[in-house]
Amino acid sequence: MSYPDSIIASTKKVVDITAILTEGTAQLLSTMNLQHKNQFEILFTPDSSEEGLSKLKAIGYSLLDSVITKLYIQTIEATFVSFTYERADNKQYLKDVEYPESIKMTFLEDEIGTVRQYMNKWSNSIATIDDNGMFVFEDDQTANKRNAILTPLMKNGLPSGAWVQFKGLKYMSMETIPFDQSSPENMIIDVTFACDNCYWKTPF
Image (cartoon, rainbow, N blue to C red):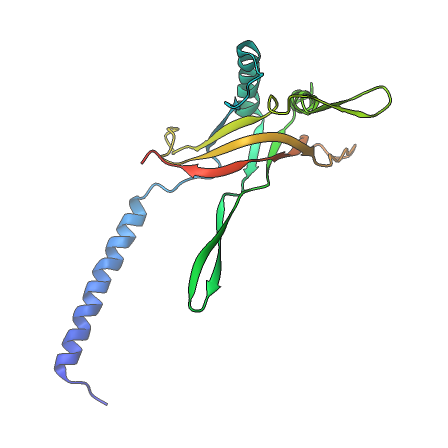
């Protein structure tokens, strides 16, 4: 079966244009600086809604938070705000907004137990255990909240144009830590935090 010259010529024009676009895309990809997941900074700050937190205490928290976030956090697993829809005939309509319930962070521990001490203080700001083994909850449950900003970094170390905003972080639980006499591995601690909100922020 043979095609008319006009169809062949038109098809060739489309193929040529597609080839140019493909070549341009390939060149763009070859010069594009892709985002690396292993380069990021995170900063904890006291929740701005904390009414009972003194300025001196807030400064003390911030200094310790800065040390923890700079040296000890290895990975962060974050779930973002999402929208759910419901169908009516052939269309989807917004149904609800789903907020993240928790996020998980993995910490690298040192020999003096800096991370465990830090998490213990955070836990004690929620509740302490009395001599009878009963939990005594703090009256002010807002003073133990933290906000956080996670900023992915570019190859040159500068912050990228999109960052993650965490709102209302509260210590929730520490996962099982395996102690092994035969393993030379460093101690890794997984901690789960309750989270009011988690979303991407951009300057524009």
